Every structure is written in structure tokens, then in C-alpha cells.
Image (cartoon, rainbow, N blue to C red; front, side):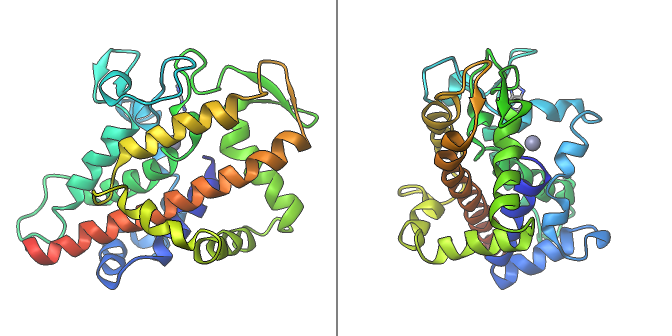
Length: 270
Ligand code: ADE
Ligand code: ZN
């Protein structure tokens, strides 16, 4: 996602934190953030090129047209062939680092960075094209037209579908857009929210499940009718924006569930 998508995920998440988790997040955020997690949720994109090691942690692409995610096969840095360097592993890793918060001994990890990476990657893994195809770099090399403008397919999903909704439906007010998604969470999607949080019998996080959902959505919604050179207009926009909103909501709900679990566990281990 772009800046707006990440901010939406983090606003939803912060509004769902338990008291314990909210206190921990406040303590870990830089002072300059004014206790606003959303303001820091694109930090990982800003350091992506200075911390080159972090670049493959934003996605987990899959073989073309398989439409399913296999962790052992797909969690890999394709440039170096290093296994375990992808968004799925990054979510597990930074979640585990945060378990050090509140223990008596000082953590060997930078827990502020762990929080900001986790908050960002929980957003990214829900963007279907972050689990897109290896050969087109998750749609980055597919050039299309978004209405009259030249764009690549990855950017359409990161930014354009959100931007067009903001302009058309919300008078360009991000807060109004977030309120509408929050209303869906408490109404239309209310009976699914517990399933999002718990992913089967297991507790959050279940990043393999999130990546599997994304790779399926990539085939079904992102790549469908969007080959090189296509013109994407109302047909594509109106059928895809509900998917984008669902993925943003799931990202926010699951980030909150993960942080609540991590910081409420502190009570047991510290
Ligand atoms: N670079 C290569 N694949 C990518 C993806 N799926 N998302 C973002 N950047 C990428
Ligand atoms: Zn990213």
C-alpha cells in the first residue's frame, strides 16, 4: 500500500488495542509521533533503500498462475536465493521480538523498529499483489491505464483504487473513509471478525494464511482482466474497491489482535 493504505490499517488497529497494548505502543512510538501509530506506518518504506536487507521483507511472490502460497517455496529473496526472507517470516520475526517488551532485561532488539516494521508488514501482506507473481514483480512490470492515466498494476492496487474512492465517495477526507471501513467492521463484517483474528484454531498471527488469501485474491481480482496495456475504468474499479477495503480492514483487525496478544502475554512472562 501507499501512505494512505498503511495509515488506514494502523488507524483501525490502534483503535482496537487493549489498555495494556495501547500503553506499550505509546511507550515504543517515537515522541514525535504524538502517540499516533498511523503517522509511522510508512516508515519501513522510507528506509527500504537505506536498509537494503529489508527490501525483500515487503512481499512474498508466488510462481505464475498457481494462485496459492507455499511457505517453503515462496518465502525467499529471489535476488540472493536466501530462504526465509519475505513478508511472512518478517511478521513472525518482529512479533517474536516484541515479546521482549516489559521483561526486566533490556532487549537485544530495537523494539521501536520492531513495532514499526510489524505494523507496516501486516498492511503489506494484505495487499494481494504483495503475494503476486514472481515474473512481473507483483504487477510492477505490467503497464496499464487507470482511467486516462498510465500506471503500473501494482501501483493501481497500492494507491489508485484508494485514491479514486477518496475523491469520488469521501470528498478526499481520509477520516471519512476510515470511519466507513470501521462501520463495516462493526456491521456487515461483524460476524467474521473473530475468524480474522483467530485464523482457525490458532492464535494470531497466522501470516501464511494472510499470504494464501492474498495470492488467491491476486489471481481472482488483481490480474483478472488487467493484462499489459489494458484500460482499467469503472468496471474494474467498482468490482475491486470492496476487496481493497476488506483487505485494509483485515490488516487493521489482525494487527490489533497480534499486538493485544503480544503485550497481554507480557503480564504472564514478566
Ligand atoms: N518487488 C518484487 N515483487 C514485489 C511485490 N510483490 N511487491 C512489491 N515489490 C516487489
Ligand atoms: Zn511496504
